[in-house]
Length: 568
Ligand code: SF4
Image (cartoon, rainbow, N blue to C red):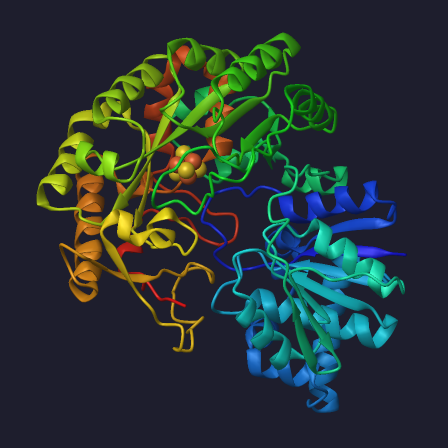
């Protein structure tokens, strides 16, 4: 059985200068191959679209691909012969460039689906042609997309046979494949479209199996390799101080990878469920997997763990093993400030950590206690300074408008930023969202909240200007603000924090991580030269070119506070 897994292109996935390979198709491929489906291949159309396809098609052809109505008409055989031929021509470019051949099943990840539906259009066009040509069954899926939206998409485009809405898609996809092969298996967390008869198969258990392992194909990794020349061509590099440093021909390949998705923390705003047993891999498994990635040419890892140090002893041992193996791999990850000390930070550095993200959320001790963060402002400050002193880039995460946040709390956060600006390199800032699986939403009374039930309202999936799937609940603070005023307070608080960051640093340091640039700089200069690295980053991001746009960016404005907190 031939299975092709596709990562379709999407606009504005992020604005980083270089992107990373997709972990979803790599993980699904690894799982299917291990379960006997050796003829499973990966097709990354995102990198191919922005590197090549976009340059060989005309603006008019691109507009056709963006036209949702026309694409739906193509899928439903409602176009004129000429129009159909034009679409056929375009789809064949994607199939040829992506080396997508005859397949029994095509799986398409809907990760980063945006409201412009470009990703859904490309997926539907490929699906339609594959179904007509080869009778291929089409599976789409990604967590965080509401299953009702999948139903809407399946009803409109009519070319998708299955949609997986599970947290982890490996087992649901395997079951779909076995069912297509004729086995009598029960589908889980899947929507099945049987010639227009749409059926949802729920199974809410099995949402956190073992932590997944990706298999990155060498051909795909090659497309993500960044050479020194490409790097400096994508940043402002005229000053002598830059050209003197970047005068070699180093290459880097950075991949996303995780060894734990669960977390024992109980932060009240977080979608994490602490009652789920840990799905951490063993130290040996992590070392083995890093070794294999290194063999495939990987030089850097962008860890996407829930946190590196959920268990202190695990993190300590992992660092020891990474140091012993001398991987020479540079990496970034987030770490909690509950289980940390100088010894661990030092080991993380020796093991290759170049940037650590700390989720601090607020600099109010009152709110840190209320959200059960398990840390104090004093502790945050101590370890930020220490991390900086060790030469590691620091990245903090903040939330504007947490429940019961008042003027004093906002002032505390603003003063914290002003006071520590020399020790903070990168910021993430989000307006508060009430996630349905968070302790806030599951136990609202414990936190003095009242959830406003809106189940009868039809959710509006298209309202958010950001990614589909970021959906918040509404609530009243029982002893504070009612929702309408709270929503305004969330916007105001987030804006004031972002204004402070702009004043002491720049909006260019919110959310942009520049992992490739950092990796090159640390590789060349080392931790001892952090001040120089800081200076160079500041100079080089004067202007930079994101991988998916054609021009350089020199101004960045933070607008996340204006995003609608729509709800379901
Ligand atoms: S915010 Fe981080 S530390 Fe807290 S529960 Fe979530 S994943 Fe764990």
